[in-house]
Length: 233
Image 1 (cartoon, rainbow, N blue to C red):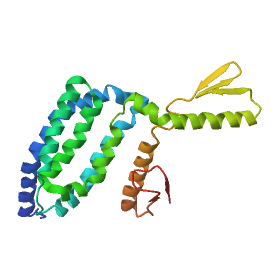
Image 2: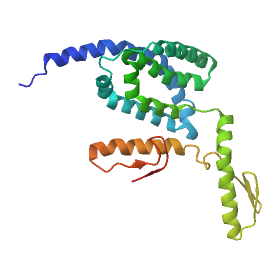
Image 3: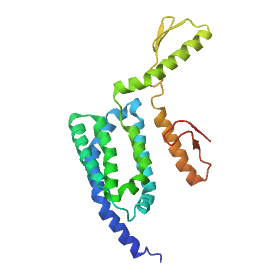
Image 4: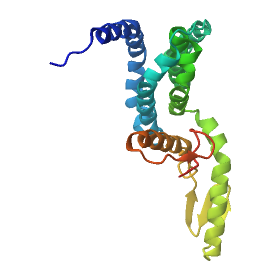
């Protein structure tokens, strides 16, 4: 009869006793946040990538957990973690009470950073840097900042569309990002300016890199790093 070694039971109990209070604390703080997001902006098309980024990052954390434990074994912890933890609490309190999502969601990312520094030191944080960095893509940016960043792209799209339609002998005129075709007006919106290209590209690269390790497929080489939307196989 197959039996599980006693040492495995002991190690599992130690891990549960060490990390269960941390997990319960995170759930108590952020389950209301994610519930509000699921019934709020995540239900809208422009922020629909948020839960995908969250679950994919958590899955990456789960996959890299044994590596993180191994790399940080016996390493000293960092007092900087407590400083970041205090900043995290301040961000969470302000964000939750004043409904500032960039603070509230940002505090979730800094909370993970603080916990890793406190529990496993800088070695643990280095092992988990990419899943935590990837979480930044789920934080909704202010509308004014998004408009400022996407305006050059929208101008470029409208310029190209105007010239293509002009070459096709359409009666077209352009005013900024508004195209006038006869009696019709077309507005180049944020979605047409590819505001979520970085998120979608990052998700695709992460999935291709992860799945290739299981299926023995050739990995795609990224143009810059994991967070780029340009890649080639």
